Image (cartoon, rainbow, N blue to C red):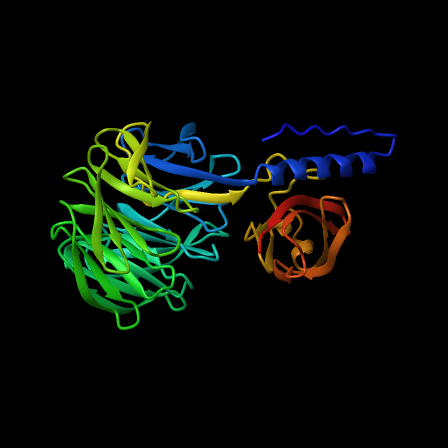
Length: 430
């Protein structure tokens, strides 16, 4: 890629200069594709999370979390990663912009599996010892509901439309189906012995479950909630992931240190790949070109090239990497683009990246109760500094239609009768 230079001349007009900076930095962002992919590997032996740059397969930082981190789930918008800490019964919330823990949430006893719903509003946590699934409100970072399932829940996955959460129950050889609108169990499906990893197909038609003590993968019809077939794989299968196009499954066989590759068209194993020692977690990169496997005993991550089905790289991490769940975060980074002023923690916008709807959550009333009971003005500007949207909003939570905005980076500003109270930035992807 050619090096790009931007010469910015400020002729005493601060606004003109700042607009030029925004344009230059935006062009850099677009030229570099702007798509950041990072893998978050939970290291149970060191109480840390290793962050891997998927572009060059290097560990870029290490984050300290709770005691014995196990499960992991990245939000669809790429802004947060949630990690279960099984020994201290908590969930760490990682801000992917800063790669720091922004919150720690107390949950049930010995949490293992975790999943974020597609719109990012809720997180479901499998509390193994409690035989429950906790529901976390991601705005308040509090547990708002407890759902009783069958004995010893382990793995979780969510349907693509967010309407169902599937729970693998280790001691009851079953899968519980939760209606996310009511947070109630609406069906129970019998599968193989000691189910663990679980994943739904991108079209929502099927659910696949690894059965640790049956050395198999169960296939569930998502319409009828009935297991209709099984696939024999390696010894003690645990983690499972699916390609973005839904045609290929990847299953970690922990006892024989291999990954089974399954065609979802024929539901047969089409390849078996040797990886590191005792693989557990597995995730596919969003472009489908790589598969990352966390190897607990060899303390490393194997990278599989999906074109050749061979291990193309091995990345050393810290002790006992598990990463049970979806551990690859995809996001458009805005870190290199400055906001036009200070960014306020009192205003939360989501999802980010956004598509057609942008939600605004205001906590301004914590400092000034009169603000949340009154009105405030939201203004949105493009990278040229041109205002493209403005609206008067009321109260704590609002949603606005941004379907007319093109792809790119935008800045927002919030005004009240007290003046400007917050600024920030977000991305639109259609």
